[in-house]
Image (tube, rainbow, N blue to C red; front, side):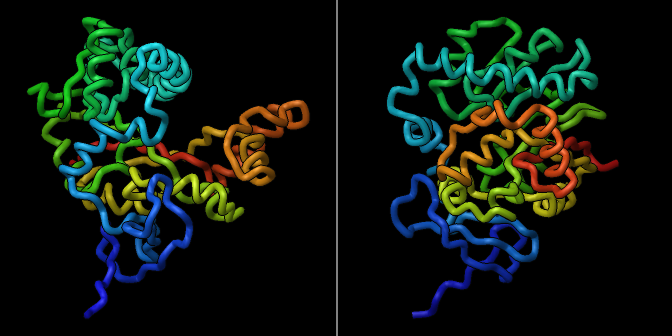
Length: 302
């Protein structure tokens, strides 16, 4: 029986190597992670089919990643409060580009913390989410006339001034095809904003922290991108782009991972590590392009 020749599911290169680390939420060897030495993307193979993904995100995804009690309203209220500060930080990052006449769309809006954070700075906010429980929370609990939630972008039958995707692109099986499909939804001069985890995270690329890698690689993440992988996608989908390096987690978090092999260390060593030390560390990560997050601003090529 001939062995299946595995190629990169992004760039189709066969110059790949297997990654030996575990994949979170996969207990067997049904899928493995590989690194493409051509586009530098780490990809899951084989990938689930789109209909399987759609069912997954409207079914077991949240319970698998969190707990079965995730959809309890009190729990969701706490989740909303927990992620609101980061949502406000994301708004602050692009606030200078916003207009009160903007109609904006967030793809993969979860329970709407970013939509709520940006709603009073634009005209109307729209969000798409495959998780029907999350859409219900937005429409019935947040219940803001300025915020509308549906399953897919095409459900709104309109164009947008700005489209946002926070930690969504890595979940999409055909990212180039997907981004091409967003072009008709952008108004003239509209912008697309994309935030993804950076697989060149220093814990992965330099510290080679296996405990972190076993946590980092996830069943839900079909791709793990660095700058090179994003450039490949954006150039092949017809966008002009700018990529920024963002650090979301502090130096204490990294020391905690290296010392204890698990998350939960944000601010843990703050009595020793001053804000100045942490800021110097962040600037070093940015210079080395080894931050934990990438943030891209895109416009359709003229």
